[in-house]
Image 1 (cartoon, helix red, strand yellow):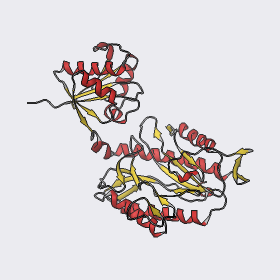
Image 2 (tube, helix red, strand yellow):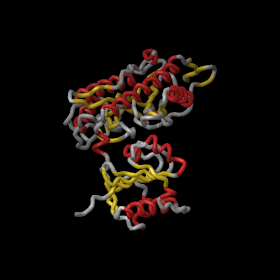
Image 3 (cartoon, helix red, strand yellow):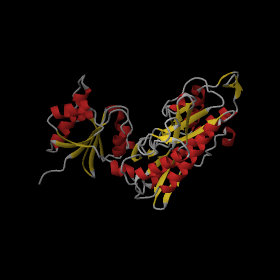
Length: 381
């Protein structure tokens, strides 16, 4: 009877699949081989052995120096050769690997005569269906995002309008200063989000522009925070849009359309519903308000502000993972944690986006998000 291939993972940076399998966090290379459910080994460099034994879920943690490690300037080759020898000790030459495995490791494993089977669906089903503990971790991360967002908005609310810009403490209020205040809140409670978005107009018409420089008054500011727990490694994801000063009628209309699209999409969520249908429900609302989207059949007027991204995505160890709410067929499942984030963008004006995150339950959608969705910064106090 042919043996089932062992599962072979080599950590490269912060690999969420590697962490999911081992619960061991490291930036350095590390090797994990699972021969069976209760028969798996985590191979580490000497300095990490004790930490690995205390924190990982591996049944065995071993020092690479005691298992055939040969120093080599080519680290890819050294780890691949070690993996091949450990497989050989069990009389195996076949291994299942993740689609995340870097090409250099893949090539060196093949050079070491390991018969590789690429599993692009590795852990996809398991990681989609969040356990109660995982859902709690994401919910906690969402609360952290709300705290950081409120801190940023409170700084905006307290700012002085001078010559069309926002000022605080006698100097321009910038994206960088606001990001630093949000990051400080996260750091104090065990979270981080180095790439958060605090983007003023007009460049916030680009949905993933991080933001830089002075913030304009009387124009939308998009705040998108997706913190990760330092211990849990699970993310939240939250976006709010505010305006300091006078809100123009077009921005007000964009915001109202996004709020309605958000509510309609959330109401459509339940197990078995196609993610495509949720996305199209949001698109229909936006078009009904006179706006457009990039989705065929929901283009809207050519000159109108448009939604140029999906309505949402899964959240977990990665901030973007399955399932997706966009024009592809993907039924939602109980246990999915997803964002719902309609947005509208117009070059020269800026953008508006509002995003909640929650859990797909047997009854629909349990929203992890409670922060006000108001355009008015004073509402966040």
